Amino acid sequence: MVYDIVRKALMAGLGMQEKVKDLVDDLVKKGELNEHEGAKIIKEFMDKAKTSRSDLNKKLTEGVSKGYEMANIASREDVDKLTKKVQQLTLRVKKLENELKGAAKEE
Image 1 (cartoon, rainbow, N blue to C red):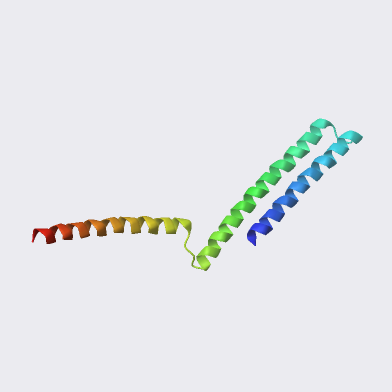
Image 2: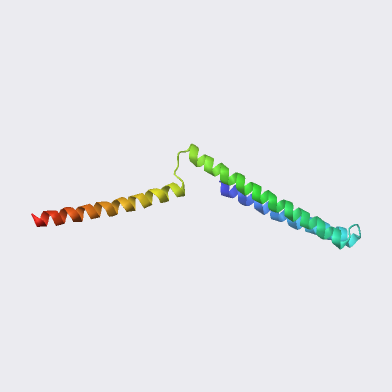
C-alpha cells in the first residue's frame, strides 16, 4: 500500500518535470525567456524536486519505523542482533556438550 502511494507520487513528479521542461522550452521558443533564464528555472525546479524527494523519503522512513514500533514488530537490526546471539549461544552449548562428553569418557 505505501509502496503504491510512493510509486504514484514519484511517477507524478516525473510527469511534472517533463511538463515544466516543455513549458520552459515553449517560453524560450516564444522569446519570453532566454535560454539562460530557462535553464535557471529548470535547475531551480529540479533542485526543489530533489529536496522534496529527500524530505518525503525521510518522512516515510520515520513513519514506517514508528509503525513498526507501534505494532511491536522487530526491526532488521533487532533480528540480526538476535541471530548473532543465538549463534554465539549455540557455539557455547556445543563446547559445553563436548566438554561433558570428554569428562564422561574419562570416567
